[in-house]
Image (cartoon, rainbow, N blue to C red; front, side):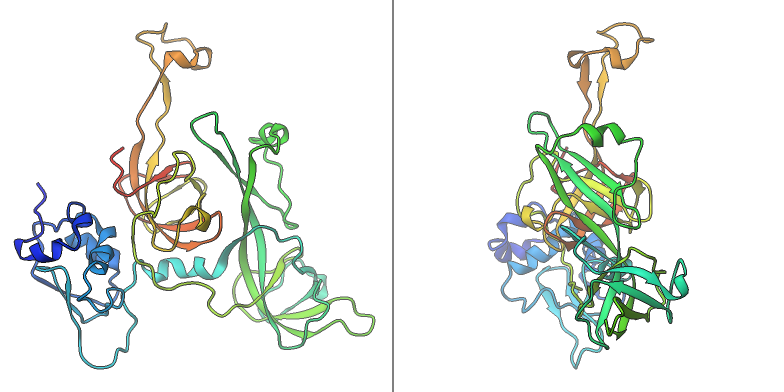
Length: 383
């Protein structure tokens, strides 16, 4: 049985009544905890609270805490009151504790983005000595950078995925689809989805975005001069190899947030609208510390730190006790002969980068594999 927050918090609880029932302290917690290097907000809260995604909200509801987002290694957390931090004296030489392990998500922060279109971007038309691949120290020739000046820096990116949604207002859920893209950014033939792609009309069909993956960076060494019709780009990163068809975007100075603080979704999403669309570097399945792409973004009220629970959608199975022989194919039964099974909880994930219609999230914990097609719900959803 869960142990409620200590009686000494009575006065503080008057200001945080909304969260009192949801955020209970575990029964075996110590009175204090010293923040360690490598801790994350999720890890600390997971040790002492039943629902780790609610700790920041409790602190924010207590004005006596100067800044609940600036907690550093060496700070002492008073778990008896849960609203007091003993701050180490002197200048800080380390970064504050964040919500997720940055080492797990920083490659995705730097390397992945989602855009509505990419065809207008400059592209690699050829490589040094007409080779098939190019890497650090080699040259790529760019079409579409007419006014580029020597010294300007660009990211070389590759369109890898196309995410779409089919609106199913008349049924229970939307249909989400992911298409692999070839070197030009065109959809490849997917025989498994061929007839669906060929026959679905544009009515209710929405493009969620194109995923661009950074391959390399480079510096312009020569623009279009004389009768030369391309811009010369010297590759300067030891990252992935560049090929013909890759696109260019200007280098940005840290275009992403490095602080992530867990919190529930700001609004209730309709069932079937928030789903896992892809698992990074895998086919369909992931687990803790894996990154997933999800079908909701800023327009849906999702921001960095939003926590979802991931659920395997319950199947509709034939009730064979009431409806016929065991050797009959399920395809021959109508809807009235089937019963809907409940969704099954798999784990929690937290958003760390948000675009308009798509977001990336890190799987924080899981009791079973997290998969493409899982339904995303409030972290406290009971079913």
